[in-house]
Image (cartoon, rainbow, N blue to C red):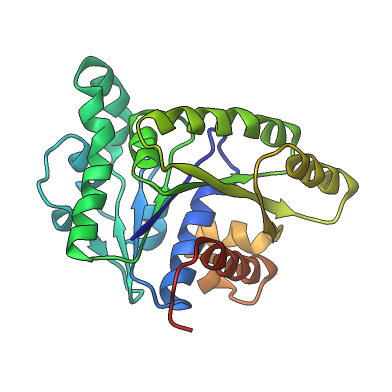
Length: 259
């Protein structure tokens, strides 16, 4: 099983949109068995993929309140795509981890990943991380093969990538195989400043994916409708770009799938 964490400390850069649409494309287009993990207390991915309700979710796992992942995983109406939902109590997890066994909480998602692999339950796990490096985010990164960093073309996003990469690299002491898969440029549009930002990223030394996700109001509409843009407008530019990104990711990571 391959695991990808979608990470950026900055909010509003498209982490959830990327996680949800990548999971949807891999399940429907590549026919892979996908588990989408919502590690963000805002629970946006959960709200998009599952009916409204209260879920024990990732918080129960991180606190050791659930023994088996299948107590927490929810099926969606998309064949091959399940969700481990977020729970509102994720917000308080950092305070608890600081006062308790932080190492245990950091190991929890990795332990779940090992259980999933032993059961051959999924082909891919995608984790939508919160905009911080708190307990849930660090636990998610440590359970991953590689990290995908969505960014915008503004100065804060572009110049902040080096710091994110450095922080992720520092976690390799606990997980030596961890690596940055690449930077994914979101809301791309044809303008000199955007082209300059992309060029800056490519020259910075961090790996940058060839695919860019173009700006379209359909992404905003899909968030209001609480569905993936693949469902709302499957032929809009962003939906096609996410399919192209999924193909690029599968090829670069050497993941076999049904064509």
